[in-house]
Length: 596
Image 1 (cartoon, rainbow, N blue to C red):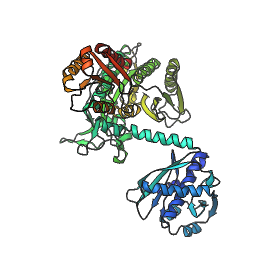
Image 2: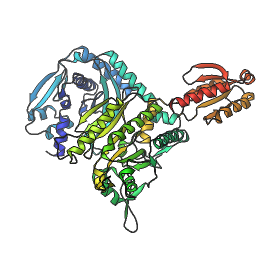
Image 3: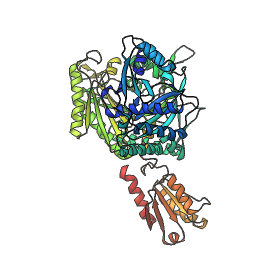
């Protein structure tokens, strides 16, 4: 079947994905039909695309005589409510291809779908009130079975995702069995908007992206750079304690290196085009650091006594993401990975994975992540073509990771058939305050690259053996991790990460000298402190500090200057009243050390 025909078969009956029997999806699919019927009442000449249920709701694509705006939603919703209250049945009929083309003769998008259907396809329609749609279904019994709903947004969408095709209007909505569930979902949507790292990044001046520099290339502003530097310092020190040796490697390499590694053959579409030099040599922006670290391993002959060798780097890599897929810091073209590669003997795998997991625990605790689960991806032993050969090697590796997780009492799920072709992997899925999951870290066992690069070590018996590689990155991409961290804390970062940890607010200009004296007491302990000496009212300064998510606000006036105290307010709004300066210094230091 051609790509076009496969595409048509997927799209034609826009309820096809509902065949799983999900009652919620079926209800949402039915709600999409009700929305289409309401739009048809408003615009009798509307042209209809498709209207499936999706993960958290539904949508329908339309070609309309004028743009739809959110101001139209109340009228559409009112018409939908009326159709639901009238409890119209959904009636399914099977018709011939000719009947279908006659019925939808004024609907060009439906006609295209019909033309692309396989010759032996069963064509069905669903009737509901005045609206008839080409649809496989299923649907609820009648419109009265549709629960509380809400229209959410409108966007442009090219027909069949092809930018050369007509641009339609897509109206998104959602529906739930109960009003309580709907209200909870709407609250989470609003909370997600409030926490959006792009908005917070602008408000707190954390990062920017410039068209002149290029899409997907992040410019870290001073405030964001402080947070990044703290994260980097923390992870480098933690890794050094665990025996990692830190290196620096170039951002580019000869293209041949990535051909040997297989990246060029397997990931070429995600790599930038090669740079051709005057002598004809081709160089490539690196998509990963693994080949560079392998070269360091090969720098000298290794003994079994040298292993495990743990090589780490905060390495910037570059991948060519399509412009339409770029999103703030969460999807970029240039990013820095907290990368490391462990070269070890097979008998060291379990111990190394225990250490990897313990390091991740330390990092997640430090940044305030507590809700996460491990996903152990295993091979399908019956699939002899997809995976690198070696039953004993696979079994030992999978059991080593499983035993490491069990010894640590870690929660994990197993996913057979989800391993990479060159080894099992362990993903860490972190859940945020809204229940969304984020793949914070992937830790990959690799039998393939040591083979590709002919890596060896000399065993105790003098024989040459092949080491195993572990790819691990506790925080993965610095940019993506930062985006999640920002949203998780809504910009109110843990004190040790906050760009400004303390702001001293003098009530009047005459209190500025004492405010600076207080600030110096914190500076001596490397606490990041500012004095807000602006010619603004005290309440305005407090409000601005709260907007900037500064953890501690210290107000000083005549009484505080005379007593050697400060009036302490926390960004949460908690008022700790007047306290001696040194006590507050210790309080802040304790707060910083709580995580760090």
